[in-house]
Length: 100
Image: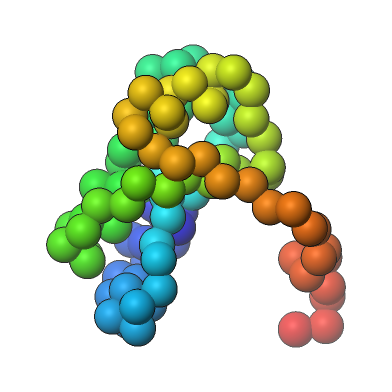
C-alpha cells in the first residue's frame, strides 16, 4: 500500500487487514525510486510501513517498488531493512482500461 492511499482510506486498510490479507509497503509517495538515494528509498518504505502499523498494529516485511522499478540501490535499501522485495511476473494492463 502507498502511504498517501493509507492516509486517505484508513478504514479500508483496517478492513483489508482484518480480512486476513497480507499488506505490503509500496512506498509512501509512489516516486520513481530508481532516481532516489539509498536513504530516500529507506525513508519511502519506512514511512509507508509506519502508516500501516499505526492502523493495523502490525509492520510488514514485504515491499514492492512503484512502477516495477528497481536497481541495486532500491534492492539493497529494502534488504538492509529486512524487507522481502517482490515484483510481478505478469502485467495485466488493468490500469489502462478506461471503461470503469
